[in-house]
Amino acid sequence: KVNVLYIAAGLTQDMKSINNYLNLVKKHFETISNKKVIFKIILDNINSKIFAGNLKNSDIIYLAGGDTQKLINFFKKNKLAPELKKTWQKGKLIVGNSAGALALAKTGISLYREPKKYLGIDVIKKFIPVVHYDSTKNSALENILDKKSSTKSLRISENEAYVLWGKQVIKINNLFSF
Image (cartoon, one colour):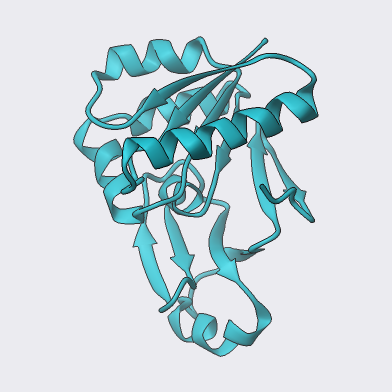
C-alpha cells in the first residue's frame, strides 16, 4: 500500500467536489503504482506534532492546488513549514500541484489569469516555480521576474509537473488527464 498525505488547505470547493476529485486521483495513483492507496486529508488547522507524525507515516506528501495565499497562510499560521522542510531533506517524495508548488517555494509565480508573485514557506530555494506557464505569457513573466536575482525560474505548463524527491527535481511531461 501507499500512504498519501493530501494537504488540501488551499481548496475552496465543497467537500463533495473535493471527494470526487480525490477519488479520481486515488484511482490514478493505484493504476500507476499497482498498489492500494490510502489518503489522509488535511483541510484546516492541525497541531505541528500531529502534522509531523502524519508526515512520518506517509510515503508521499501531496500539496493540492487552489487558493495559493490560503495554503501559504495555513502553513505559516500552524507553524508547519519546518516539519515539511525536514521531511523533504530526509528524502520524502513531495508533490506540489499549482498552488502547492508555489507554497513550497521561497518565491513562486502564477500565470493563471493575471501574473502574480507569491512568497511561500521557503522549502524550495534553488528555483522559482512558474505555474500555468505557456510561451504566449513570456513578456508578462519577464515583467514580474526579479532581474537582479540569479535564481532560475522553472516553467511548469499545464501538462507538466515537477516532483521533489530528496535532492532531485524530476520533470514529468504529458501528464495523464482525469
